[in-house]
Amino acid sequence: MDIVVQWLLLNTIALSLLIFIILLLKKAFTKHMSIKTHYKIWFFLFVPLFVSVLPWNYLGLGEGIQYIKNVLTFTGKTSAQSEYKSGGLTESNDTSTDLIRDFSVSVHNSTPEYVSQLVFAVWIIGMVLCLAILIYSNYQLNKLKKSAVFIKNNKINVLLEECKEVVGIKRNIILKETPLITTPITFGIFKPYILVPSNIQAVFTLKEIKYVLLHELTHHKNKDMLVNYVMGIFQIVYWFNPLLWYSLKRIRIDRELACDDSVLNLLDESGYIEYGHTIIRFAHKKQEKSFELFASGIGGTKQQIKQRIQSIANFSKASSLLKWKSKVICMFLGILVLVITPLTTVLAASNDVFHFDGKNTTYVDLDTYFKGYKGSFVLFDAANNQFQIYNRKLSEQRVSPDSTYKIYSGLFALESNIISKNNSEQTWNGKSNPYKEWDKDHNLTSAMSNSVNWYFQHLDQKIGEKHLQAYFNKVNYGNKDMSGGLDTYWMESSLKISPIEQVLLLHELSENKFDFKAENVEAIKEAMLIDDQKDKRLYGKTGTGTINGKNVNGWFVGFVNKGEHSYYFAINIQNHGTEASGSKAMEIAKQILKDKNIY
Image (cartoon, rainbow, N blue to C red; front, side):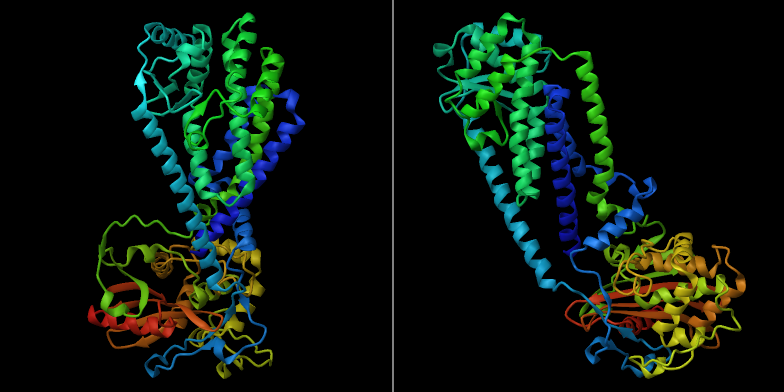
């Protein structure tokens, strides 16, 4: 839910910025753009709706997107509390897990969860209401279609075909009349209609009807009906944005001006005045609001008609220079859109979901192990190249790694020669920590088993953010996002990884597919060793995410060496009425491995 609210916030900012830019360009370059361009540049507003499929990370914009995302994230950036409180600490009470200590420090979420839930609920209610209005509008159009009858006057039907040829339309256009309207309207994408008032034959001359038909047919040729539906989608999603409502009003005005311009280009000079007089006759016949959501018409308010008549009076065909100026302005706006729209693709570009191909995979039912939790379990049998996955959706969902990241922090420190296999001790600074086990010097093995935060924070600081980022990129660690701060990026913050990726990484690490020094890989594996039996060994690392004193995220990742077989696993559990912790995740994982006769 927080992700949706965040997406909405960023899209709204990007959309509002685009509206401001378009309005500014229209004001600054009014005389340097053709009338059609004044309308068409509004189409750039619709670009953010479709750009999420673009590979922004490959365009070099991924890091910028991640930074913006974390600055503007609705849930508030989590950060380590300056003072440790008893309610914010968690430690395993299960003596069976003493082989590895599951310690975590609470981080603070500045925005209460109910706030995002309230915002989300209000947004949904608004969308439902807007959707209801659009459905009602469509219902009204259907009523019009049912009330309409074909025009029996053969001269008008012949005139329609002549106008279609002039405009350049070959598809069938249904022309009908109905007493329920006072101004002609046109609608329909796949089955286009033009509806005219029943009295049009008595009130208008054949020439005036010709101008009406040219206008309505031009709307169809310009795909204005499709634009109406896209505008409807924007109204539903961004109903709360007054700038959008203003821009949609301007779009409708500019659309009519552009349509008039297209018609005038089809007429000779003697027809300009006659066309203008035809427009004036609809000044007092405003189209109903419910119709204009999906339909376009020749009428409008008196103010709109006045603006259109002024435009007709000043009409002249666009010169080559004006056309070139219009193209340059559109190109400039297009570049700006490419800069702005990554804001609207945060969800896609931030890679919060890992898309797994599902090959060599069996999906298993492990519900009985996860009572009170929502979670996932991934097991990879390396010898048989076979995956077993429980809950595919959550196994692909990226979440904070919490202390499981320490496997790689230690490895990167070894590779950077910050520590070595035989000399990995770091000196405690003498300051009191939340756990007495942390208040002493530690080496890699003791720091890993006791999950000593300060130890790995020291290592990260010595490696440096630039080199650390390079290592995360090298192993392709989740979303590789360290923007949450060097000391806390892994702690319910910016860095995220999925259970499937945890398993893939552990396998690649064990096989040393990243070409790290063999002794460094062995040092990390030794630090992860939990239990060494005669015929099998268990390696692993827990991780617990604690927000505002509440355990919300539990990890246990590792592998089992059993004879000639190696099994890699990752379990993640999340709060679902019961607090989720790494120790609980370990308990569930060990039971699953036992029942599968692996460990």
